[in-house]
Amino acid sequence: MRKPKSFLRVFTDTGPLAVLAVVIAMLVGIVGPASAQFFNFGGFGGSPQRQSPQRGGGWFGGDFFAPFQQQQQPQAPRQDFSRAPGPAKRDTVPERNVLVLGDAMADWLGYGLEDAYSEQPDMGVIRKHKTASGLIKYQPRGEPADWTAAAKAILATEKPDAIVVMLGLNDRVAIREAVTEKKTDKKDEKKDARGKPDAKPADGKPKPDGSTETAKRDEKPVDAELSPDDAADNDTPQTATPEKNARSGSGLYEFRDERWVELYAKKIEELIGVLKTKGVPVLWVGLPAIRGPKGTADMLFLDALYRDGAGKAGITYVDIWDGFVDEAGRFLQKGPDFEGQIRQLRTADGVFFTKPGARKLAHYVEREVTRLLAARSGPIAVPIEPTTPEASVAPGQPAPRPLAGPVMPLVASSVGTDQLLGGPGSRPAAVDALAARTLVKGEPLAAPAG
Image 1 (cartoon, rainbow, N blue to C red):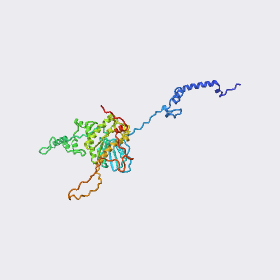
Image 2: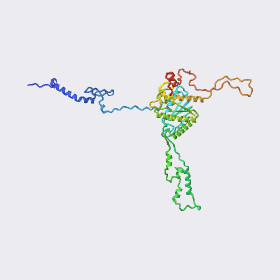
Image 3: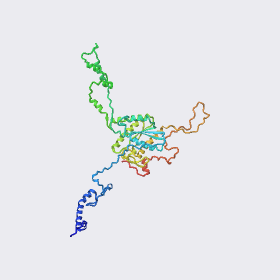
Image 4: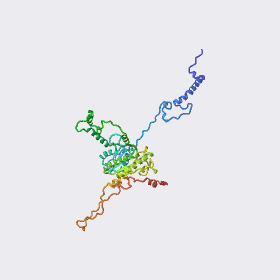
C-alpha cells in the first residue's frame, strides 16, 4: 500500500516551490507600484522619493494619512509697531518734566527722550499720547472729540516745564465742517406773517371771513421742547430747497483741498493757543518721511503747515526731516544714528522707529529743550569780595558800580559738577553724520549736481 505524502514535503519539492515563487512574483509586480504610491515604499518600480523630515513618523516609512490631510502652515502674528515700550521705573523724582503730547509718533518720541534723560535724574518725561488720534479726530466716539479739548484736561492736572507736540500721521482724511444757517431772513418773514393775523378792525370785532379753526391755530401753545423759531414753523410743511441742500452738502472737504488747509490751520492754532496758556516753552516736532513716495509727499505737506503754524504762534518748530532721509530725500530704513553709527532706524512697516531711531529722534528735541530751559533759568549769583565804602564818596551820592554783576549762562552744561568731560559714565558727544562719514571712515564726498 502506497504511503501518503506529508504536507511539509510539498514545500520541499522543487515543482510546487517553483510555482509558488512565480505566483508571489506576479503579485508583487501588480501590487508593488500601487503600494509604493500609497504607503510611500521606496524601491518598487521607480526612483525612490525623497522624504521630508516632518513626515518620518508613519507606520510604513512615511505619514500614512498624508494623502487625506491638508497641511496648513501657521501664519506668523502681525507685529504692531505703533506702540513703543513702556516707561522704565526711576528711583528718584525728577525736578523738571517734559510733557509729550500726540499720537503713536509722540509715543516713540517720549521713549527716546526717556533714554536720553536716563543719566539725568533731574529730568523726566510724561507721555500723554493717543495712538490712533489726530488733530481732526481725537477718538471715534465720546468726549473729548479733538486734541484741543484733550489738552485742556491734561494741562489741568500736569505741571510740565516744557511741552512737546508730535502728531498728524492720521490726519490725511477729509474734514467735515459744521454748516450754520443764517436765520435773519426767516425771522423777518415770521414777524411779517405774525403781524397780519393780529390786525383787527377799528370796532374791535373779529373779521367776518375769519373761521374758528384759524383762531384756534393762532392760539396754539408753543411746544416747550422746540425753540421759538422752530415752534412757529411747526404747522407749516417744510420743503427742502435746492439752496439748502447745496449748503448742507458742501461741509466735507478732502485732504489737501484749499478749504481743508484753512480748517486744519485753524486747528493747529487752537491747540497751540491752549498749550501756551501754561506759560512754558512749547515745541512742535515735524513728521519724518515714511515709506513710499505718496506717504513721503504727504508728510512734507503736513510739515509745511506745522512750520507755518509754529512760526505764527511764536513757538519752536523742530525739523527732523534730514535725519531720516538719504541724500536724494528718500525714505531711509537704515542709516547713521545720533552717534554716527549705521543702525536700523525704522521698523519693518516703514512708519515707526526702532530704539536707535527713537533715540535719534529724541536727539533733535533734547537739544532744543535744553536750550529753551537754559534761557528761562534766572541769573546766577557770582560770589565776589564785598567792596568797602570809599571815604571820599559824598553823602547822598549813588554808590559806585560793582566790579562784577550777575552772570547769565549762554549754554546749558550737560555734565555735573563732580564729573569730568570724557570721563567714565559721561555720554558721548553728538557727531555729525557727514563728518563721521568723511573724516572717520574716509568716504569721499558726493559730487555736486552739475
